[in-house]
Length: 204
Image (cartoon, rainbow, N blue to C red; front, side):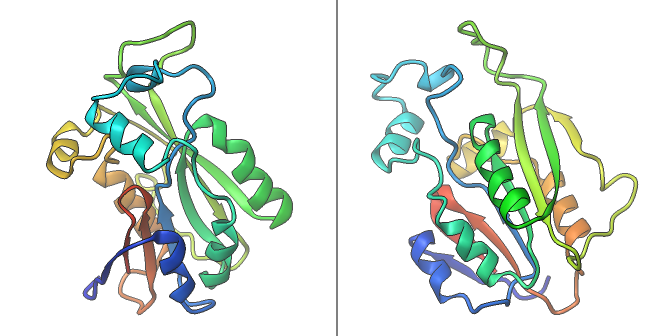
């Protein structure tokens, strides 16, 4: 991956400048929908002002989750539907409905299990995992090894990178690397779109 281009701006607007059928792979970490299924940690109480992550998320209205209209834009720019979407459990139904029911895609669920979850239950199971849904249609590249094609990863939260980049849910680098290796022809001249919603940043 010799050529990397970073764009900073409104993700919903920037994608409109991407040509049709020009992207091989999308890996995206959109805002999670917060408020269902029992909130924990900094979201347990809606008046938890003063917490650095809570204030930033609420100020930018990122607790509402993704605007699903952008899914049409994802499909438009991809050569073949070939996309990884990080999400929480409250968003799984919407993504499955869009990609499997409406677009007839294959799907896989990848789980990042955390050995050190936030110790709040509030009458619910621990928030000790995050989901990544992978959708692909016939003809999309998918080829990995026994090690890279695993669907369950266990590790501690990535606290060091979280502090470095001031982000509450930095994903483990090895998971992202496996996704890229499994679903794109490295060095083949294609383009991948790594879409960081929370920071409104693109990487091409």
